[in-house]
Length: 136
Image (cartoon, rainbow, N blue to C red; front, side, top):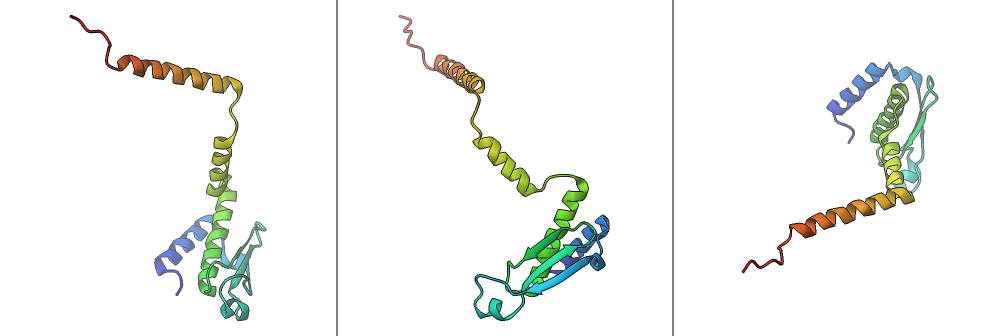
């Protein structure tokens, strides 16, 4: 019960494109923690991967399968390497920044402008309504 062949090939293609070789990655398997019962207590399913060239590290213990954790960890490591090479922030960082901007308090000037726009818009909508003029 591991990743599909297509997913493995896609990951390998990304690694080739970035110049990441398996020889440059140190793997270490340890026992997981948390849910999983005897399986996590007795078998080493948690994988720690370290890319020697960039110094980036990931740790993955999402599933009870060592093979699947290895694949997921490798995919995360490649994501990190790609983000570093391309000089862009990860999607997770972008999502956090977006939430931070949404929660940030507006300045007085921005708040006043927004309220003025709302008043103007409501006035337009009020004028569109039925008129009280009865043309007898």
